[in-house]
Length: 566
Image 1 (cartoon, rainbow, N blue to C red):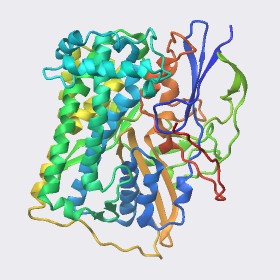
Image 2: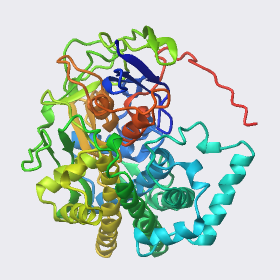
Image 3: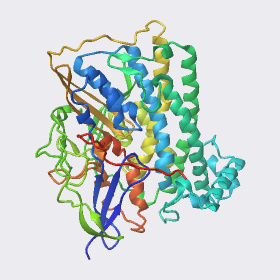
């Protein structure tokens, strides 16, 4: 019997446009998988010919979520090219902003994007609020938003949506799927935290904006330093940041951590979350300056899931392959020499479980995402990569947090190499950042007592050629921006983003990337309701807007959309 094709287009609860196709056998087990992003990236071309000092402001428009990540990357790539060393205060503020971003981003990802893959909202409506309130103490000594009165109010609120036939953000999901494992009471606890997280993410965004001026699309970074001088030197603004930080940190500890412990208990034997790591090479970069001598996380990579050995990154071994991406090119290119020249070939007619449709042709090009490789090998990047590499490095903070979690849940180290492990790693990374951001803050407070510099002057010689790069971490993993400057303007610009590493297609050697590899072997309960696929893909936190952006080179209007809010 021939394999059947299952098409999910679009994948929702992500940033951007993503299509996933899988081929399943007669037992509904995935044999092959294909990842396709369907809007084109053009930011790299927009940046050509621009003033290098504007690179960060323009690059941050790559994305509407991790805008700061690309802003910082664009600024620091140019600083690297020009040989500009920003002052210590500027470095600390940039780190504080990054820590604030992660605390916001990861909470939003789990509760409002990924959480509904684990939480059955309809089941929560039949829960006993009193039992749920008592159960919450099993996962933390100080549960938040789980009093009997609060849970009863949450239940009635959502029941009101259902009675009106308006499920809002909970509509059109695969409720009742047999791979949901939470009890009704567990579902109700998580549902309450979903709603509470809506309040917390607002506080987290405000926390970021204290030094960033705005969230999203901050405005306080420049090549050479930062511009939020009055905020840094204001005791009121410093105290305001700390007070909001404490609110967000409290939620991470009392809700986010507890809910992942609860998920580890409920899903510890669920087959669909105990795979999901098909590429066992992991790469991560330095991140989160705590002091002159310490970053929270260190760079490196591991191969074949072997955490006994960490290797140093050689940036010149990073290349992008376009064999199966909609670009012209016949060989992998190092990003300094990267080319972004579109070559769209479209889809073909095919059969799917839902009838005839346009499908991916795996023998041809099928996505706007390139295929990054390190030393010819695919790499997974992201919170799981960060924790695995740093665990292998002997990073004491990471080892303690990971070991405590494994002991608390009874899971083995091998459980980290799963979809469940990837989801837990994002939470653990968030907790590590929340625990240590106060060190960055205190370091800044101490330093400004004797040093108020925030900017380093520089010049760009139009007769000189420059090249530089930023390699660091964004919420979804390792991010790098690469720039060449000639005649005082940007000659070439390339961004290799986390989702490009993870969502990239097959390369010239037939090797697939992490998204595609993660789905092979996955068994679907119901191919017409492929919740298992969503759960795996959402665990990466896709950001297709980062890996692909849309423009028309001739300035033509591409599409017009009219939205009727009623």
